[in-house]
Length: 513
Image (cartoon, rainbow, N blue to C red; front, side):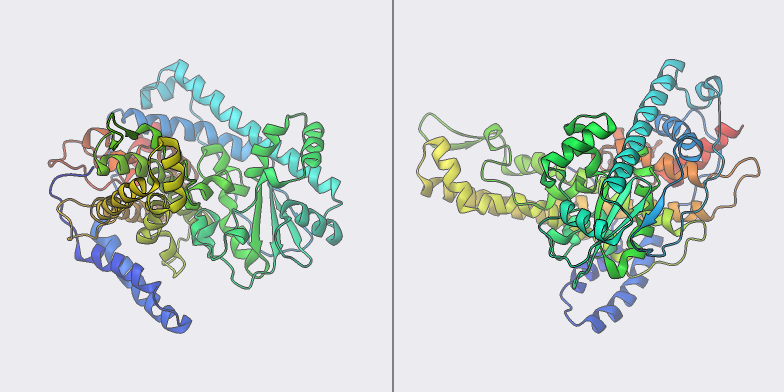
């Protein structure tokens, strides 16, 4: 975990405290006033952690940076010239603005990429093959969408209602509409409590999981229909299920325009091409309760020769091994939401809005994805299941797991969710907040940055950042040798990571020169 001294700012602590307090305000009018004030705190926190954009030329970039730029350069031509323009159709027209036109892709030969990025020729070919494969996924999704459109006689309203009931059989609806944007199908229904926009990626934000934008389940679709789709597009049923999971979204009718506009990161093909935020169902498992046999308990809990329960490692080590993949996956969803927000805002990125607070609410996000672990240790069903498996009395197992749950809670409050200034070392929540604030600031600044007269950079920049963050290990935020922004930085921890601000422009200039 993170160690070593690191200054925490008062602005960060005030921001995190304010983000937690806003959820305790029940009156909508009072909450709006409080959130307007909290936006000022958010802006101050951003300025406390941001770093100047690096615009100097550099030597060959680190390998992870070079690979991300190589993938971005292979991706851009597909989006502008290979993949078809996203279809706009539906039983209604929500009226969201179309995505801005793509800029011409920066085309460089393999020799130039080898010299600028330090990637060997054979590896460049492998990157190209991977991007070609992802483009094939988008094309197959388009075929599935076209097949469903024809099979259900869309955009006819009756056909839209039938398709809506087939895709979401458990949702109460009256007269569902269906809208198509590229390969993505959006089912529009009335929702008394619509979810926030960020729930497109962060399902735990939705007030009702059953009507979350990410609530579609391909396995819930009639098997006969899945078989007909597979035959119609020349695929197997397993592949069809995977394609559907990245295509179907449930949105509130009254806010459909805003949801479709923000979701253009997906409907334009960028999510699949970068493998960042492609599947709507990607984050659902983080918010679900763990089953009694979950938490991989057999790898760290056993009965010794005397019949007593024994942990393989300390309570904190066990929790860290269980928590890390959950928080790492949560971080990739936050990255997708941040990039989608900047992409939808376009070149004229405006001021921060109240809805942006949902993205930066790390106290809520961390609590939402870690609480299922603590609940699992306290669950009577878990106690009964493990007692039967270990052939031990339920009472003894319950006492030990309850004790373990308390230790996990204490460890979570210190190492994972501690506020700045309250812990000796910064918590993972603090490190992630600093990183997300600094990176989001640079993304917005680069969208407004004066283009180099030789080439426009914004589309390439978003793709580069997406490819880098998709493959980045979470531990890089506190393990210095894993960081690509340390570069001789003193101290045991790396500086706040800001890949777009630290590496994009410098690598972009190497390509141009």
